[in-house]
Length: 221
Length: 221
Image (cartoon, rainbow over all chains, first blue to last red; front, side, top):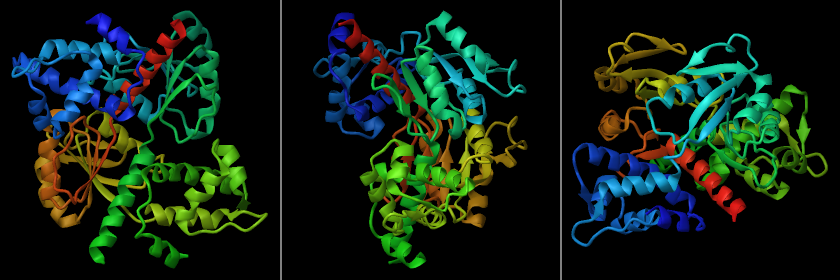
């Protein structure tokens, strides 16, 4: 199975599919806990409120095949998803900006599968430096460079205020970081090979509120 | 200007545009602080790392027009964006699940423009009930129903563990909530008129890690 996983690495999977995969993984872990050893695509679809055809298509990225009338082997599928997502590797990350959101992410990863492990956090605020959050040290920001050179960390989590985001992102790149999880509102300008994933609370909130206002107008009309 | 804003309420704006609007708002607030009273689309585009044509198209949703060779009036544009996004209204919300992520959102909104105001949080954990986070009370979950009937809150923030998410979402609907901000991995099954905005940390993390692994394979080949 490892072989089939490797072969599939070359195929670029769509973002909507990728985003659904952790949901399958969570669901299958729960099924495993209940002692369910095989599970069909229609059952998964019914429980997750989506079409069985989509389930089959999504899960095909793992290379794991279901058997007719039996379905997928739960263990094999969990392993396949973890392998595909890279969640079975240690994806070490540095975090810069140990404010409310940064602290939440540090505490969060004790309980939830994020697929990455924040190994140190950095901040310029002297009150935060030297503290521990969720078992993770908050270090002086100026130590980022030397530490990243030593530890060869590839992922940076950016939870700074907006006005320093670009500068910190550039420093991440100088430090050898290849992928940045950007929680700020800033559209980062970085070399093309750097992977950036934006998660903006304000943007999602804007969509929610605007859709609510739209629907209220529709009802009133 | 209010009139033009109202007229545009009927047009459904695309999600990518909506998601970019808080970024413009943040940028313009900063420009206002610097005393910049008019600003052109090419300047905005240059600073935000996007095309001037896109800036013009995005900002058109506000109904605010720029003047040739001068650009937009900063104040007017800020007002137009706030009006369009509904950020100048009090969008009151209830939050259920005062864990790490829920607590972070409660603390976060003191500092950042989320466009919504969490007025109370609810949890079943007795240790959390009675505490304050970011000035917001954490109340017993069973009080959700009576309080929502009294306060007519339309927005629910869902930061519970995944396994109770569907149940709590249904309770939100019973309570008259019209829009749910879902931070869980669960694909909620709700009546069609309920607006759901999903923000999944695990999904975004999955995209980031997978893209990083993809790029490493490409480099090795």
